[in-house]
Length: 238
Image (cartoon, rainbow, N blue to C red; front, side, top):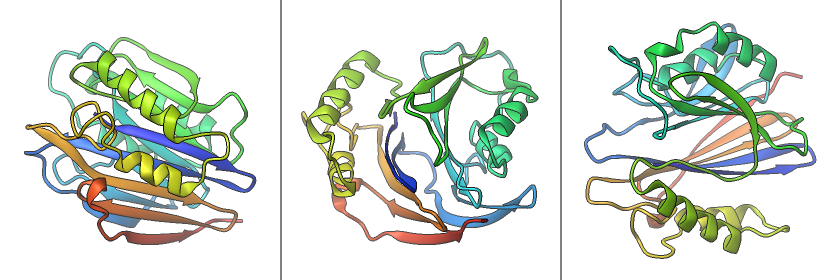
């Protein structure tokens, strides 16, 4: 039930993430700096699963996890997918992330899509690692990526149409902010700023990775309400 989009610049990139959750889920803790594998990483924390959906580290690597509802649910007791982000957040490169993910028993996790951002991403797109519940697939993804548990095709079509209308070749950061606040075609399950009786967009995150530092701008609550940002900075390793 989430929407993520992104934009690259000559010396960095921006990631924009609407987190959609059930109304019963606890409110996340704002981004904080953690040391993982000797690497400083910045992420919000979900109290329910004690993991995260979005992290960025001092190597300029950002991880974003979305549920893949169209996969097959493994049998048995499952761990929180957010634990994977916390486990991998200290990795300094795409190859290391892939190596570490391949070493994890993914049968303990529900299906997911994991995007791996680096400043050196090529024209083919951003690395996408997808666990289907049967196998781990890798591909390259262009902005945006959308997930939804209900009415997936309808939601996908509606949000892609909104994206194409809002984001042109010369789009800037404000265009992406407007996109993630959008209620097109109406404030509903189909809109990027999602509203349902049982679930809503509960936060908006903007990660800005530059040459020497990363800024994590975190907006709790519905993006359409334009809440005040919690901004945390992380100096990058040279």
